[in-house]
Length: 152
Image (cartoon, rainbow, N blue to C red; front, side):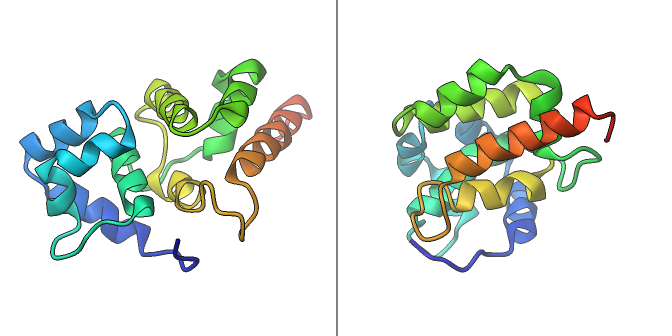
């Protein structure tokens, strides 16, 4: 697993250039490993064998049409998602955690900004950078506290 983050904006631009059929295939995949059998994944990462991290990004890209958002991902979650649902994602095992997280992103669609979500996804499951699940939970509660205090 690579520790250096790629240019997430470039991945988003590549996705936007894909034909509609390739985008639809990525959107319909039920879990990340299903993408390995779809041409859209290989069009998104031409000339290479997509890593697990890149496959994970491709699993979420169809649900993040905007590069940037006016509201951060954690703030969107704190405004719209229950505490129980966040904890369910944090406790779930792969790939159920990713499927549940994608359902959450789908619910917030199209408000989720890609550049806000992509770093969380890139390090999902990485032990070196700390748990992304922990960052999800902590970020949720920090955003919830800011909302309770009247901050935006």
